[in-house]
Image 1 (cartoon, rainbow, N blue to C red):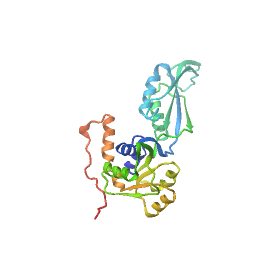
Image 2 (cartoon, rainbow, N blue to C red):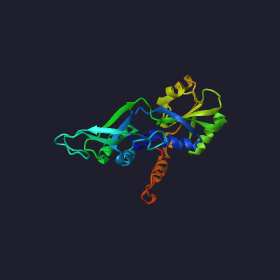
Image 3 (cartoon, rainbow, N blue to C red):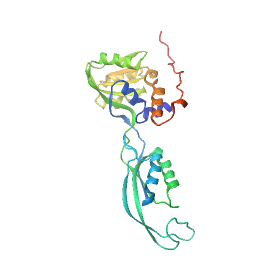
Image 4 (cartoon, rainbow, N blue to C red):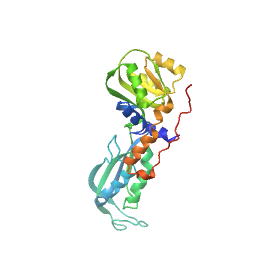
Length: 270
């Protein structure tokens, strides 16, 4: 899988960047990610709670929508009896110990789970830390494509030309099923023909994507969809600029970043 495909899926990724260029305010993902989300809880001596929590946040835990480092602390008493062959951080072998502990609860996605568990173990003072992992029914707030709205209703032809200009597209093709004005818009950069059925259930006025085949166009009309078909390259050529801006936000020095200038469409219009 190409890196830009991962970036299509990411929160704040390429679809969000293109939507911002087009003045589309995001409401929700078009197709929510199937990635699992887990509740992660760990029990830590009170004086080590901040150290452990910061380590798991750095590893990827605690992200909910546009919020990071989300957690809940619960104070309580932990008990344990170290047996022969252990090397207890607190307590004595053969004697029950009672310790003031903090239960740190947070959330973590499937992709970050292994790293979060390892970060916790690397920073926890106990040789055998106690922790819990529960799969949640909550769905991620990211996924393929977006559904959003523009500021005011506009004629489809006028909005389509505006999209062409803002994306500096080589061409656009309109698959027009009706003459409704455009307000609610679905967007999927790259190739989004496989999502026509899902889009038809989202009550949108226009679907913007690329690589719409002849038979997909006929199906769009059967579904009553207005579709704006744009060359695949013209919806994804902003990848370098979008990723560059993200890396700057994460504190990567500009002087070590070089933008590729070799991108070009494989097609030539005659």
